[in-house]
Amino acid sequence: MRILVIGSGGREHAIIWKLRQSERSVELFCAPGNAGIAVIAKCLPVDVNDPSSISVLAESLRADMTFIGPEAPLVRGVREAFASRNLRVVAPSANAAMLEGSKVFAKEFMKRNRIPTARFAVCDSAESARSSRRGFGFPVVVKADGLAAGKGVSIAGDAAEFDDAINAMMVERVFGDSGARVVLEECLIGEEASLMLFSDGRDYKIIAPARDYKRVNDGDLGPNTGGMGSFSTPGLIDEETLSRIKNDIVEPTLLGMTREEKPFQGVLYVGLMLTAAGPRVIEYNARFGDPETQAVMVRLDSDLVEIMEAIIEKRIGATPIEWSGDSSVCVVAASGGYPGEFEKGKVITGLDDASSIEGVVIFHAGTSRSGSGEFLTSGGRVLGATARATTLEAARARAYGAMNKISFEGMRYRKDIARSA
Image (cartoon, rainbow, N blue to C red; front, side, top):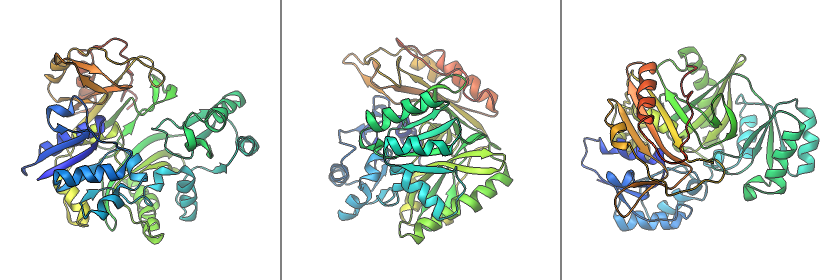
C-alpha cells in the first residue's frame, strides 16, 4: 500500500512513524517532509498551499491513500482537488475546514448550534474593535479571523496591550488578510485540554485527550507559538466531564455541520477550557494538533492505516481503537528568537544518545541535513523529545532526560511541560 503524507513538521513525523508500525505492507512518502522523516519515508517537494499540486503528486505516485497534515490546503480545497481525480484522501471539505479557517464562522456556528463557548464580538475594523472592547473587561482575548499558524491570538491584560494587538492584526496586518476581521472574547478561566476525534461524517471515535502549551516561556508567559510541548495521560479529562463534552460539544458540532451540509470527515480538534461552569470551546482545528499528535501517537496501540481507511470508507464507528494506559510527554526544542526572527543552519548534536533512552522517540520538525550528513536546524520549532512510560512522572523524566542530551546553538525549551499535572 502506497501512502502519502502532506506536511513537514513534528506532527507529520509522528504520523509517519505510526504508519510505519502497521502490520500492512506500506510504502511511505512525505511532501515536503524534513530530515528526520527522510530516514523512514521518501520525501518529495510540493507546494503545500496548492491543492492541485498535491493531488497531481498523489496521482503520479499512484498513492492508495493520502493524509493531509497542515491546515492551509484543507481550507483551500484539497479534498475537492482529490475528488476531481477520484483519489482517496483523509481531509475535510473546504466548507467543513472553515471551522478552523475562520474564527468568525466558528463562533457564529457555535452560537447557532448552542455549543458552549466564550462570549464574543466580531469586529471589521480597528475602530469597531475599540468600541466593542468596552463590553469586555480585562484580560480580553483578541483573535485574528483567518489562519495564522497558531499565533493569531493575543490575551490583552490592559488597554495598551489591547491597542498593540489590534494595531498589529488590523492596521499593520502582521497576519495578512487573516487580520482583516478579529474576534474579541471574554477570557475564560480554567484548565485547557485538547480533545481530538476521528470522524467519517457520520460516526466518530474520541482520541486520547492531551494538553498543550502555547506560550514560549515557562509559566505560560511570553508570546503564543505553534506549541512548546504537550502531554497525554489517562484521566486527563474525567469520565463525567468527557461525557458532558461529547453530549454538549462533540455531537452538536458534528450534527450541526451535517445539518448545514458541511459533514466533517477527517480529524477534528476541539480546544477546550474546563471552567467551573463546565467545558467551553476555545477553538476548532480541522486536523491533528501539533505537538499533541506526538503525545497521542505514542499512546495509540491500534493500526493507524486501518483507522485512516475507516475514515475514508465511513466505517469508523465499527472500527475498534485501543489506547495505551501509559502516559506520554513531548517537549519541543525551538530556535533562539522563536516565535520571532531566528537563525537557521545550526548543527544539532546528541540525537542518537537521546533516542537511546527507553521509551523515547525524537520527532523532527524544522530540520535539514548537511552534505556531510549532519542534522541542522531549519525552522522555529526544531524537534520534539517525546517519551512514553507507565506514569506521567516517568514519561516526563524520560523526555527531559532526552532533551538534556540534545544541543544546538540558541536552543530553547520550556522546563515546565506536564509539571503542574
